[in-house]
Length: 374
Length: 108
Image (cartoon, rainbow over all chains, first blue to last red; front, side, top):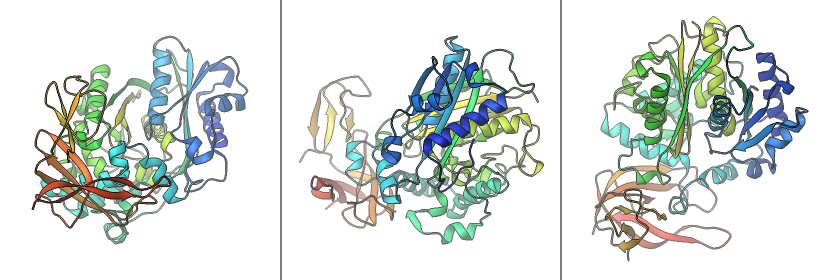
């Protein structure tokens, strides 16, 4: 993957090419070894005036005769591209697949980016001026009212994720923050403040998926990659703290893998807003309903805790280049499961990891389970 | 005015128009009055897209029949308040003219 950044001078296509080359290097494969390419991207036309990404990418890699397509699933485009690659290999249609995801959001100013992203909503939501942080604010206000969690606990999610990103060379922010910093940051959608929200980012990420005996001597196995849609209009869910798509994708993934939440050693959760880390942990059975905040307060989700969550910094601090995020989560799990990382940011003895990448505020979710050798 | 859609087959209600009822697959809906709802959550949004008021106070309200609505608040309201849908309000400006719709207001 590329290091995620607030603004990267390279074009979106160049970012995708760099990420693809790095993945091929890591897998010790050439472009000619790959027979399908799955590109995750949400809105290159709107952000970058670029269309036809998949064909441009394979052209750049000197590939012809392969199957290539772009996969769009808003902020979960990356995980959906990965799911497409896994399905291609699992079905036998592809021997070796390359999944590449990327977004270059810096080309748009904040108002334009907010508008592009808010266009994913239902027309009745859009006309109200609803943005993604608006849903985060509504969920956070309801959660803080219904549980004993307080505003400082929510801030601790961001503090942890910034601490985890501190030593991550690929993270957008290598800056520690404290609870006071979060509480002093500007209000975005009350009770959420700026430091509760992921940034806009530029970046790309890529992985190689193949069947059978792998090229590397330390492969990581895809135990499951499952997805589910929820409602399109967020308010069509009767419980504002429910994200059905995440729950169903998780259940399907656990079923497919043959192990459950108890077996997970670390998790990459789609923390576009701090509140989402709690809601998704609860939907995935990684914390009891209404209790995820206690795990955060007690340090159980810290890097050295019982279940480290977002060891790479999450969307909050690694960054969130929409189409790249789902694949960057998979890469973080691979690095952790292979034991590739320096001690200061490694999770000890992890053998099973979970990633969940969420489209919109739960329109669609993709849950991936990976297993290492350890 | 009629503000919610009720499935002609099963009675499921929604604010969000769709071709098919998610409960029963029915394809015909009737407009019905929303009645009195309860505010489940509120947020004040300080970063809004062009053409949208800033700050934008929003609420999530539950109405009888299982229909929830996210809409702009027409006045200052708190969680637990009884609310109704009021219209027709100018909600956001666009190049093609204003988008109009309903807001949440206190029960009279």
